[in-house]
Amino acid sequence: MPKLKIVTFGCQANELDSQRIAGVMAREGYTLTEDAAQADLIILNGCSIREKAEQKLYSRLGTFQALKSGKPRLRLGVTGCLGQREGEALFRRFPYLDLVAGTGQIPQIPRLLALREASGAAGPPPAPTDLFPDEIDLVRDSPLKAWVSVMDGCDNFCAFCVVPFTRGRERSRTPEAIVAEVTALRARGYREVTLLGQTVNSYGKKLDPPTTFAALLRRVDAAAAPAMRVRFTTSFPLDVTPELAQAVGSLPSVCEHVHLPVQSGSSRTLERMARGYTREDYLQRVALLRAAVPDLALSTDLIVGFPGETEADFEETLGLLETVRYDSLFAFKFSPRPETPAARMTDHVPEPVQAARLARVQTLQAAIGLERNRAWIGREVEVLVDSDEVKRASPLAAGRTRQNKIVHFPAPPGTAEGDIVWVRIADASAYHLKGEPIGSVPCA
Ligand code: SAM
Ligand code: SF4
Image (cartoon, rainbow, N blue to C red):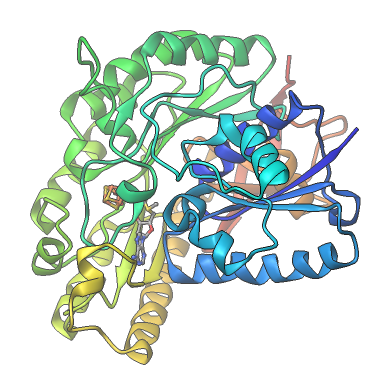
């Protein structure tokens, strides 16, 4: 049986695409391997969001090219947002490639490989698809937690972002298809689903008839509760509505965690980023969520050193962190991306200034994260035992709370992945909690 190795770069959407690629290639007889030396085909499923992500992929490609020179039958491919953005140019730059496919071409991968093999041709250039590849059987990498795509693409065109160019316009999957997938996952013993979309809470606006993400959450909750937890990411601030806040606060399976990227605390910078909201609009959405969802955990994404960001703008971002007090965040130095308006702005912030601002964000967040986590000491929390976290925490068991916080604890005998363990929190760092188990509900 031929063997396929997939190396995934970037976000959850790319991870899910890798599972789709594995599903398409399974129909061609391929089984997955981690070992590059065993592989007949290696696919690098690439991210394009920042230049650094692209450089990482090119450096791995160089390693695999060396492997291919000693094993001529090994085939190499690049897919994902990078394949979408660069298209045929990748064949010109790396003539030894056997496959380049965009985000909308996953079902066509076997045909593109055959075409290249037969005639050396590149195949049609990538174009974003308007369809959801429902017909593909995913090869999921966990028996416990699953990503479920609910929408893809984006119409917002933030000034820095390449996503509308690599994933196309916003489109939503039907509620019926999503509920059917969640129901099937529940029947197979899954314990958690994460509903995925670039702006997940914009879901449904273009469906006929239109619907809302809150309405979808209600239907998914009915299919998932009480056996499964439901998470969702990534939320766009302007699409946080009272209906959504109420759904997150009241639906039993929906976890109390919202990832709400702010990008900057300065309204001036937000306007230049074309985010469509001000600092005050954002804070109003945070207040709405916090009023409706007890014990809500909030996380965010930030860009430091966006073109024209002054010290005063940056101080406003630090001030916003002090005000909101996030549980965690991802912060990035601005990276100019081809085709985006921000790449054409001329007032770039020098790299050393970006690096210093990034360090200041991380220092401040470490203090806030520690304070947020310490507030859990003495409380009893419901932990879903997770194999990835178990490996990291060995010899302790580990898992996540409904707020998505990692908890390490001495495992009661027989503790297994997928169990719910109640843990009394005794200690906290900025990044995780520690505690003692006080009871458990085995995975059915
Ligand atoms: N849809 C999400 C939102 O509305 O914020 C963002 C999705 S994007 C895939 C993930 C994160 O990458 C963004 O939140 C942003 O912080 C970061 N990012 C995107 N483009 C970037 C760029 N050109 N430079 C630096 N960071 C970037
Ligand atoms: Fe990119 Fe903005 Fe769309 Fe998020 S909302 S995917 S940052 S264009």
